[in-house]
Image 1 (cartoon, rainbow, N blue to C red):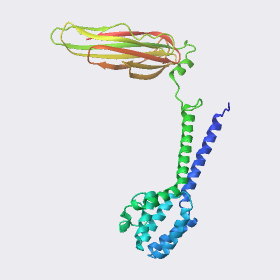
Image 2: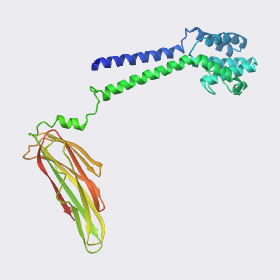
Image 3: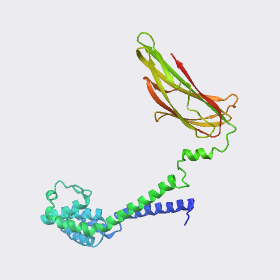
Image 4: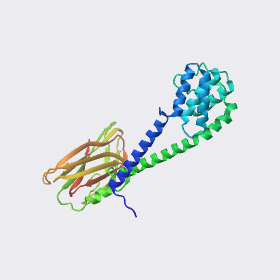
Length: 334
């Protein structure tokens, strides 16, 4: 198998992009080359037309059209020649020829497109139907646009291939600088030894309720159970809780769930908390304190609900290195 080194691939990619840019520039300049004899003749015909020397313009345009019929591509230039020829034939009162070349121009440039300085509104034959000239229009499209279409398709395919290669190299290749690292790979790379850091998770549930008349009873079960971490990096656990009320007429209830994360000895922890599959907390902290007096960060009211019923709390932690201190749930009822 042939192996291409990372920088070699980048050099090849850069060369291909430069070649495409150079090719596009060459094609663009080819349509407006002042030294091109076809363009020179077109400018001469245009000058004669605007000087109202229609017979002189006719001679130049007929030779120019004959030359264009023998070459492929240059559709935009051909369209400009045809619209000028149509206008010139109209000035000479050759209706059939005027309509013919107007239709050829429309087929290439589109309806209402013209050249600089040529106003189509006074030209009465321009609005004539092209039905009778369809054969001539079809003929010019077949003879003059094949090479251009092929070239355009080739350039689009080449450009797409280069962009696809660039995206692969930047985001998906093994060496890609912007490739997203999966959580499993990051977990496995940092799970060798957990001896110098510590962590603890404390949950707090506050329940407030109002009653119509005598107060009833609020139950939060399982009251003393929390998603229980172990001493393995990337631990992931979940518990389903039920909030219920009985023995009275409940008018309102509010549950607020908070969490405090603790750690020390420069241990880094990434906490992900979900309720019923929805992410409600995504935070990363580094704790520089010692394990004997660990630091902590409190996230109050990470989840609030105003009804009884059940919900599943899932807590996932990714750790740089850790020794478990513990986890607890405290329920406050008011």
